[in-house]
Length: 123
Length: 159
View 1 (cartoon, rainbow over the protein chains, first blue to last red):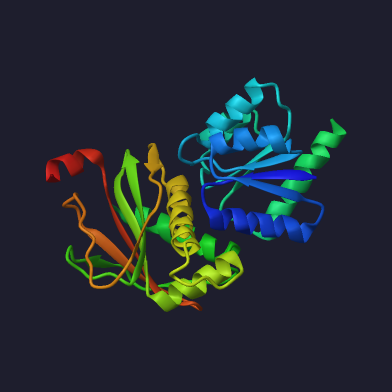
View 2 (view 1 turned 45 degrees about the vertical axis):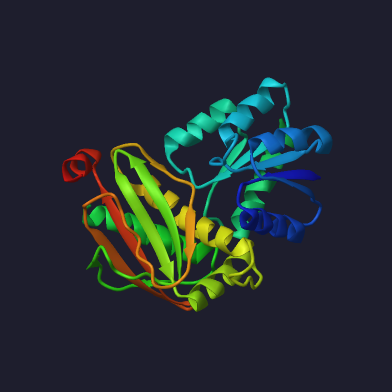
């Protein structure tokens, strides 16, 4: 599975990447903001995107809207400190498939990825 | 600033430690922080704006910071490494973001983190409101949370 991790923090990209590698089956690409992610998505063609919200240049919500406006249906999981209910609703309305609030455990991340992919297969 | 605000930061810090650091943290009694107080060698700073304005600072001695970052990232990173301030900033971001979500009544935004590494410095705030320091103890070592927040109207009056 080709997974694109989008986060402006290099350490957070490392943490998520390391967790996914331990799970196995993930080919990983990373992007440092929404603009970078849009560019990488074209060449990398991810099967899954893990997306931070607060980033410089283009934030996660802006990326998500642009991604969906381009007709891309790739599942997106928001991984963010934005935990308010209104934010979750905003993200889902913009096309997020799932939502994980930082901080999280490795198990929580793994389960969110698994749940998202299972739901898509069942749909 | 009231005790509920402080509680939000404590709960958020506990949550960070129990999840991404696989550890625990204990808090001593909060105390007022003097404006010219010296800080630990490493500080992660997040600004808050909106219905509450101010900042939260996580101040750590170098040894505590290195230990905490190692638990966070899964590898030892020295302060000279560019990833070190990034990790400290992300820790501060998670604490502030978690506290923000717990605060009731109002919309609050948090800034991108700033990180200071050095000795013998003070952090001056434009607000005249008081700061509260919460001494923290963890298996990685001691550190401080310093919270300075107020309502915008009170901040304008105090300016």
